[in-house]
Image (tube, helix red, strand yellow):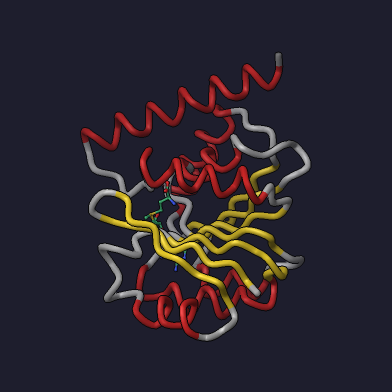
Length: 189
Ligand SMILES: C[S@@+](CC[C@H](N)C(=O)[O-])C[C@H]1O[C@@H](n2cnc3c(N)ncnc32)[C@H](O)[C@@H]1O
């Protein structure tokens, strides 16, 4: 019963954010690429998730809906107002995992994080993806999934990131086209 309640309120919050984004565009991952993200989380069943770029909590809720109370999502957002709103949306969504929102610049926050992650969702400043990955790389377990949004529309700004995950030999990586954009899904070898 608890799970049922959690899922329905999480869905409700997600639909409200999607509606708000139709009125005033919000750079959320959205329902189509979001479905792929949810599928990857469901398959990987991570215990420790790192998210770079919280905005107002849409993707954290989307991932959290797929996880149980033993999981934790650490999500980083540089803007205080967005981080606060994300906190409210996440409480309202009532999802099982613990969600820790850290307000700050991911370039400064990632080096301070303790522990290891088995899933990372990268969705902040496109030209910084490679730096986020290099800072987080030592904290990613073998077989960790790194899921990067906007690998289609912002491929030029993410060129160093895409070259690295595809050609360094450190990841098994593939691109999934979704509508006019796409996501890069990379598994750490
Ligand atoms: C595309 S939005 C994230 C959308 C969110 N993942 C979702 O799908 O609901 C990108 C967010 O990253 C934040 N951001 C950009 N650069 C950042 C940085 N260096 N550190 C932390 N947050 C950053 C922005 O403030 C913005 O809220």
